[in-house]
Length: 319
Ligand code: F6P
Image 1 (cartoon, protein in one colour):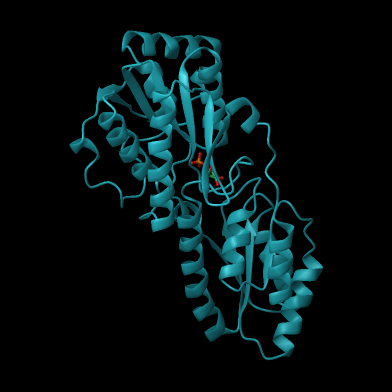
Image 2 (image 1 turned 120 degrees about the vertical axis):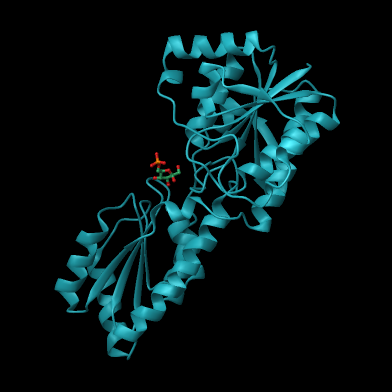
């Protein structure tokens, strides 16, 4: 193998740049020619590809977003689009690929690998919804962003004696809500994995108010329901003035935490090591603080488990 490509696809995640940097630098260190594929699978189909060198990844380890840009490509999911992508790889002489992204992106990596392209997948998504890895790159940065927001909202919530519903990202996975809710001392955490009971939330708010509590923070994962509906129900059932904050894309940006940078750097190196050893069709993960690699087909079959113990911990601490 002589030439490898690197791409980022799907929703971006802080730490993607650190991973790109590691792939490019470790690749060059190991005498590979490294090519950057811009805008994910769309760029692959369109041949939006260029050579990368040591300086092209300078000054990016601390930056959010992805210098290779990202996209969600419907064309890549079609037979024709996939064929085009394989042809472009052939034309550019790319015989190995490192793919950075979440679940959907890694499914694409699996298809490429099964079509004979040496492919390694690195889990990068703020959602932390990859069952084969304890954590995904970008997750802890997003959690920090949310915790910071919770603290700020709590200040004003206390001043006004209000309840605040804070909607965070996570359509199917409640990890951002769970981790940030625990770290931010939220009174209620609402996630898709646990049946939502509005009366329980209201009971807690009333009990808190009766004890003289001036704030009430409810962290809601976007997949559960509409934050404004939840807020309205709380206001109607408790009489507490309630406001909504939808954090949205602020969670996807920002400088990655050192943990995300470190894991990204380690995974970038590991991806190159595997390609050098001729191992392909692997997904990287982190388990018990060790970087692991597993068959990408098997990896994507592993269901993400919800941390019920952590959820219960948060519940106990917010009585
Ligand atoms: O997959 C990451 C994620 O940020 C989800 O949490 C969120 O629901 C989704 O992406 C938003 O996607 P888009 O960028 O397509 O609006």
